[in-house]
Length: 430
Image (cartoon, one colour):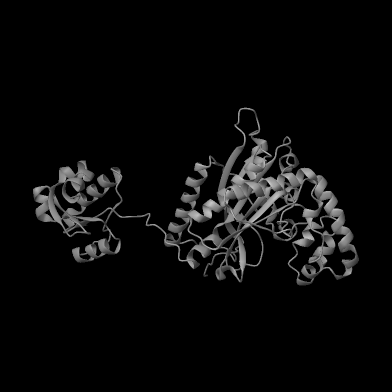
């Protein structure tokens, strides 16, 4: 029988994994600069964690979640996104306590799961990098999170980036807008798609997010959320815009943006890139917003929050499409060549000594001729070769060659074993 990976998943092979590692480590370093710390949550949670936070009319809950009953008859879901699990961990572990500095800033990386039609940049198992910050309702934090997302994409070398923002206001603003939207859509009820008909009286904002072409025509002239913001919500959004202007971060206001999950309030945003790798026109690569009230939904105290998520698969496609150069992270410092089977023990000792001193080192494990070993050293871009033959074995020395300059020297074995860095500095760093 021939085994294949499940539909909607991918094998990330070593050459590609190097790129993923670079992206993840770059993100870690940047998040550390902004004082965000890593958090790791389970890949599966109680079904209620996601159904309660994402909203029971969202596509994530109604169509896309991988959920099942475990052997204890518990209703479990593989995580479809990162925020809800982080909020659950924040509440359960009482990170809101006075001993924790506010805002509490965390980031996460890992696999997410959604049952949807696999396509370029969208898999059923996908990987996400995200950040969350709890404990501050200030617009300054909104702008920090947006700026960090823009900063991260700039670090990756992406071009043609566009920031789109909107505000969903507070609960009072949303309630007023919700009723206005129902009043507008009700006369078109029979024309709406089945999904939108279901959502109309439960969460009409979801209709604005419909992918149905006819729904999109109907909502084109719908009232704007920005016309229903109360004074406090308007002041919050005005301050966000003012701060973005102060930082020189360009943006476009999109009054139709609502995001795909129900927990967002006030500022929401999408960072988009113009690339044919993901389709025609601008497509979203990073998105998020504020979610005041979500902590309370999961049993915590009143505690504002904001964050964003970034899809790794889409990011990697974009970086490849824009010919972003990835640095070499797996440089081979030395390749040890053994000539004659009696040198095998000595070459193994040298390789292990080099590794113990922090060098990346390798040798032959296929009992090949010297010519094939040197060929491997070239192919692996080794910085130095260390050659041990019968005469070197007898004299307790080795030949060290710089592959860049071609300079070759004979060195006592004790010096190589004790301090290879000193050998390089003394003989090759002129």
